[in-house]
Length: 162
Image 1 (cartoon, one colour):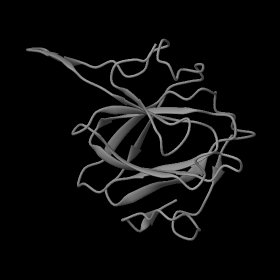
Image 2: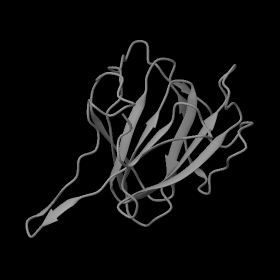
Image 3: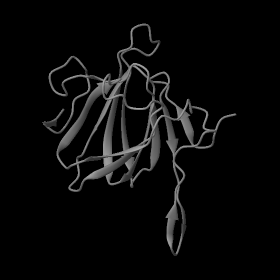
Image 4: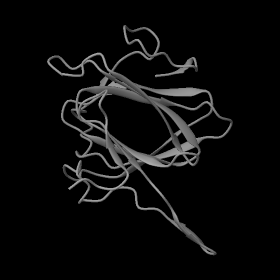
């Protein structure tokens, strides 16, 4: 059963974009982000918040096992994804997504897909991630790629990051 507002990327296999909407009243709003009955839900690992300051890049990186499921909850982000997975039917595919207060969505990124985000605006943005795995400080499931010196065809607009 396909969920309303969920698009499976044709550009990168395994990437899902879930359009979010807020239920508003005079007190404020409520916005569901990620549910265990979402068609792309794998399992729960942990929840964390990360903040990206104006002018900075957080990327590139990928995970071997982990699926990231993140939502920009304050501010706005430019999110880049690149499929360099050997044997992937969408290898070489890239995706640029603008998400946040102006375009609320959850982005689900499977293992092996390079990704990151940058802040092009004047205020920090806040991301809540609900990855499928618990972070292991002794053996992190993360491979980092230099954000500026690489063969990835997508380029960051900012010049500060890692």
